[in-house]
Each structure stands twice: as C-alpha cells, then as structure tokens.
Length: 228
Image (cartoon, rainbow, N blue to C red):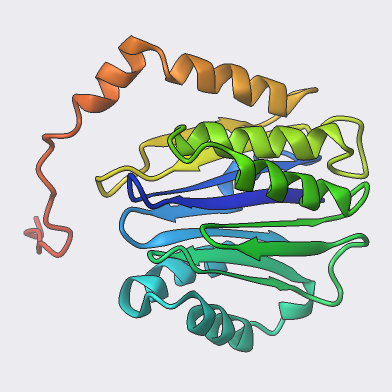
C-alpha cells in the first residue's frame, strides 16, 4: 500500500522521510524525524507508536539495530508491520513482516533505506535506492528524497493505482521541530503535487520565514504550571 525512503545527510546532519501511497493523509501516520536523533517510517498495517517509540529509543540508545529488534519484539502485530529507521550515525535497519501485503520488501545501505508493500514490482525499491545512492550529496536532502520517490512512482509505485493519491516529505533541521513538513493528503497525482509544493518551499520568502525561527528559545517542556 505504501513505499517510502528515509535518508541521512551527514554533511548537514539532517534526517528525512519521503513517502507515497494509494491512501489518504499518509504523512500523518508514517513519517517521523528528530534532529540529532534519526528518522523512522512505519507502514504496512501502520502503527504510529512504533515511530514515536523508535525516536525515543534512538535518543537514548542511538543504535538502530538494537532499537528495531526491541520494538519488533514487543509488537504482537509485527508480522503485519513494515518499519525502517536510521540512527545518527547513518546506520539503517528494516523489518518487513511475513504477513505484509504482496510484493513487499526493503533495501538498506549507508545513510538510507527504502521499503514498500503492495508494490507493482520490486523494481520500485531498486530504482529508488539507485537514484538516492547516485545522487550528489551536496544537493539538499529533501530534493534527493523526492527524486528517489518520483523514480519509484515512475516504474509502478503502489499496485492499486496508476498514481499515488497521498504523499509527504519531512526533513529535520537544527531545532526541535522539522525544517520541512510537506503533505499532500489527497490528490490524483500526489507525487507531482508534492514536488510542486517543495519547489515553492525553496523560494526565497519561504526560506527567510524558516530562518526567522532559528533564534527561538527552547521552552522548558518539564515546567510545572500552576493550577488555577
């Protein structure tokens, strides 16, 4: 039902996830990133708690292999899940359960991994991996991830439709919230629409707006508020 790519840019220390599906609002449940920590995509019979828990665990453990093994062990629905993640050292780990939708799989490598289920063909993942590995590391991570996602779409993508109907891109920055969080919740050609939105996000005015947040003070999340 879904195909995705997660990546790490060691030059700028950024993590990202690009995902597409013949579904609705895929970006709301699949992709998770955290600055200085890692990135996660959880799909198949999606369990967003795996994304949340993965980042929490990576914050303290920073070893993708240990984190994924522990999380999958705890999940009784593991055979219906597909999860892949990457840690702050660029080490990626993947899981595809045996009960995932037909034509499912994953490919991992240094600073990236791709995974998909209910695919038109396994070439979707192979092409995505090749495009990312061959891309210029000096190009922005968001652009590299979108190029890989678009390549997967062009060779078949999700088996249920000629074009994906929901796509998303999330990239971490230096702060405690994503640098980019772009979503196409429903569109007849969602990958193309996501690429169009991304191009707008790179406009000078949009980048200046994001830069204006760089000096925001980090709030104390453990503060105890007075009860009225």
